[in-house]
Length: 243
Image 1 (cartoon, helix red, strand yellow):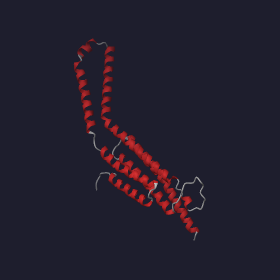
Image 2 (cartoon, helix red, strand yellow):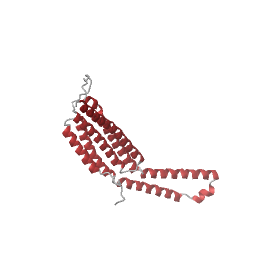
Image 3 (cartoon, rainbow, N blue to C red):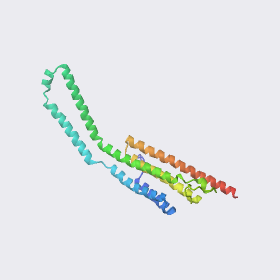
Image 4 (spheres, rainbow, N blue to C red):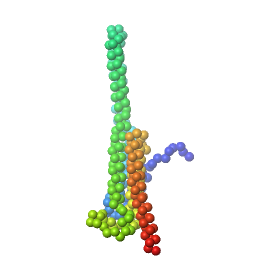
């Protein structure tokens, strides 16, 4: 046994997304959902590449950070050495000495603040990139939800007459069940792609964004499974009625 915690493998998620794209394309060719699945496959491949890139350290930024810190420390040491402290202490009155010390403390605080800014620059740039990609995944989830929004299971087995504004419904019961199931799978995979970003950082903002996407896809998926259950119940009732 190993103590290492299991992690998501980007290549496995990409393969699953591509297989789902093929399944949707074969079942519903030239459909809007097929186009969304193709876009999601492209996003999954791009996500895998970005995850690999984000896991690598940015040596240029780190070198610039070390250079900035070194320059700052050298400058502080230099100014500390050229000041005649014995003369300052001898001629300064208590009020002036207090003001001077206060100014020095403020300069040190600003210097350490600048050092902290430089040290966290790489992390903040990566956070910005990740949050932008997570926003795209959130938008994907809403697009999938829009495709299943008009898929009403109660209409499939009913003989109600549609109105002029009713959406076109040509699916059989089996096709509608598969369509809804594909939507639920896509939402689950969107959550997995978001989790890939969360697995590469412990940044609080990123983790919150990943959690929000997981909750969003879970809520949307729950609505889809409710439709699937309704479709199953209606089918059982329809079969029992025709016996």
